[in-house]
Image (cartoon, rainbow, N blue to C red; front, top):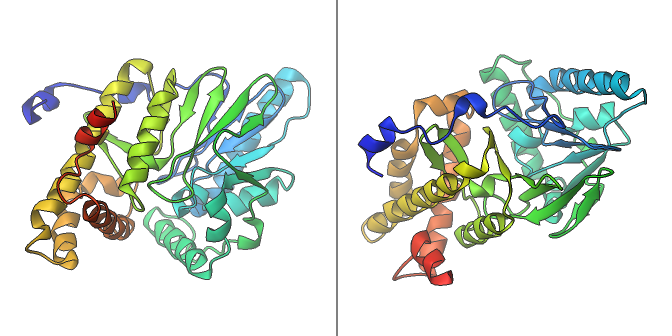
Length: 330
């Protein structure tokens, strides 16, 4: 598809991105991070928590949903599970506050998350980025996150299931964005909550990747999620898309990955890593992204993304294009 054709074609209907099924409620409290509450027949699960600066509002939103459910079914309803797609500050910033409010809720995350929550450097980064986001989005400055509350109660592995009653959540390990990235399939509805390893929708006509660790892991995660054959996909930082839009999503994601790999490859022989990064950041940055991601966070991610591409290309001196690899795999 040419640029001119893309300008005339709406690939993703943004007006419908928050039209979740009745048992999935968007409890997002502020800019920069999403939070979705799944209401099972017996138990509830929160997928991601959003940022620390809006934790109080998130807790209020969850309480409001649970109160309505209590009235509807005439029984006490609480929060049972906190599911992390990965351990970046915009996804787990409010986790400690949520855990404080619902102490019995079990924090569920990938195995590598336990290492992240125990590393002083990672804790400092989460705290620093959370405060930066708070200043940017008008929150309280100098937030203090209680990291002692952020302990993984259940370590998840590929194929694990979490029962919500008549429904269950199936775990798909999907590394690439981070080593701890996990996607969640809600069954029997077959709604797949993707991790950021499989990209995000940037606009009605574009999808961007965000591989910070391993491009090969990203490729494998994409194929695993496609093979799940979801009826609907929930895209990080965006919302839900229909089955009819899925192939467009996967195709555009691969195009973006290829573009980034090619961008680095053609500069590799004549430029240093620092010089490539200096061109990479302004080339792929768009001002509208500031609505959901501070530039400092984007720049930090870009540094790791370029390094991941260089590592990927070092193993594939002749070819590294995603389309070629997938075609060969098929």
